[in-house]
Image (cartoon, rainbow, N blue to C red; front, side, top):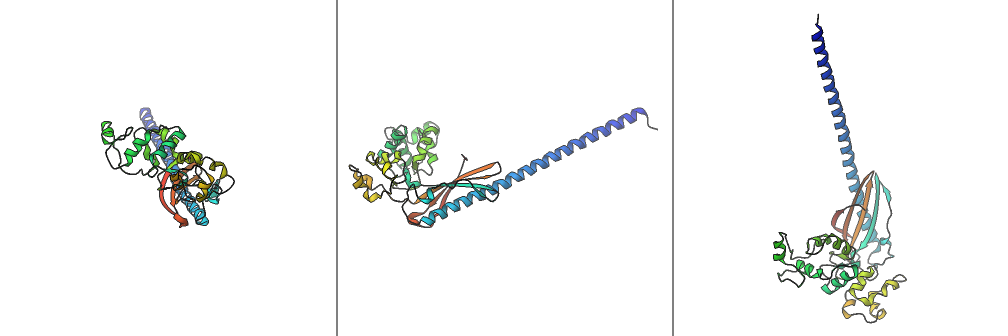
Length: 288
């Protein structure tokens, strides 16, 4: 016969064992739930990635359909797709031609300074940008070369063309706010000319203040770059050579959603002269 003390010890041991089993069961349940959520999130991420790729492919098809027609703000490819249900989620696509912007690597300093004045940025920063891009070590009046960056413990300048607009943040004087102000109006896509039918007013005025009347004129009809010298008296001789009816690169801004997950990408497509569009860059971005 068991003594009372022994029965108490056995009961305590059984209670401890049951508690341990309960904790283990709860732990396993939580682990299983966590694994399930991770699996669901991983699946949603894969599905969203597939939707992004579908959106970029749709943008390429839209560009291919217009061939070598001039780019205008009323072209079919400029229209937003809106949120389109697809597969397990939805996708939204917006296309822009990069010829509506000023190329930071190709435009002369005087044009870039004029753009800075248009958007409220210090125009002397263009000297630092030029020093970052050029191959020499000669410092411009408001620029910065290797000794300056080394003195601050920084790497620079690149002595090469900018690879992305975001790289501007590494250039002396270009803080996040400055880069954000410039971003809608600049590119590094390799566009040597600007399309007067799609460029923002700030870009046209930076090229030449005489182009201001085109902003209203293009709302009613297509403006052929070849007729601009006739339409705009007083146009600088160099301006006409910087205008084009169509660029060669386009950015597809694509957003995809699956459940609560959102993903976005900016894909650069090259389609010179109406050639078959080709994706040449892919940059994940924060969904708006």
